[in-house]
Length: 168
Image (cartoon, helix red, strand yellow):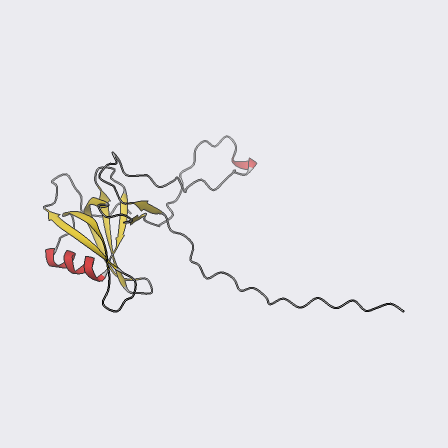
């Protein structure tokens, strides 16, 4: 007589990850850096089919995603020409400040927050104005939730050679 093997316990099906796809990001400029780090070239989608051999270098459609400036350490900053302010973006209905980074000329995005929005609104910048946004550090909140990010913001008049329209 043979013994019955116990059947394996059924495993729960795994749910797909709800983590959103990463967007390109651009670290904020640190005072000791000579230039801002560039976003890696995201336009290369891998090897091309053999039918495209001999056609040369293609023109590639932009991804549509603007690199996001990430403020990580106190003293990180970004300087750029204000191109556009987008309202009610994403699930939190946040603002996005689209800047043309000085000196690289790259279009970058800074996500708004309650503190940053209040400071920029107080300056009432027009498109083309130069903004200097410096991260000063985290501040504890009264409710004990995630700390708030504190910023220092300056506005300068538009540069004469600057076009205030976005290049897309």
